[in-house]
Amino acid sequence: MPNQLQSLNRIFQALSDPTRRAVLKRLSRGPAPTLELARPFGMALPSFTQHLSMLEKSGLVKSRKSGRVRTYVLEPHPLQAAESWMTDQRKLWECRLDQLDAHLVNMEENVDDRED
Image (tube, rainbow, N blue to C red; front, side):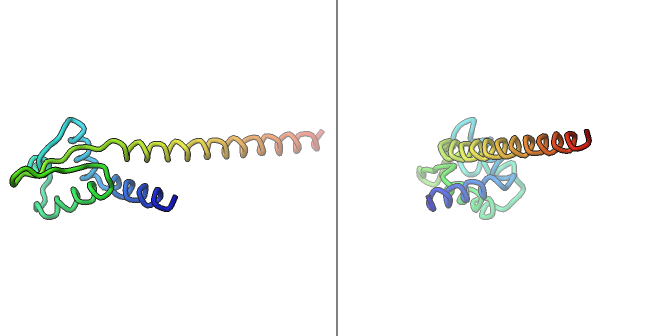
């Protein structure tokens, strides 16, 4: 379980940055080399490669090197893990809010009964 939590932490940390989300969006169309991924962003290549490193450490992308060109590809499995976690959280909070609503309705009915 601790490894799973650490993995989720890395995934959400990687997703927290708009540059990294844009890279993932681009990679959803297919593999791309580093320079192509960096082109739309106005930053130095070493700074941009730090973003790619974060994405790779989180498991959201994988890379392969051919000669001097490193190409990145999207790995969807970690996104599924994050989606599953969010779905579980949504269910939990929907249940808690339903319980709160029922409690408030019950309190309101008890107040109405006392006023009669």
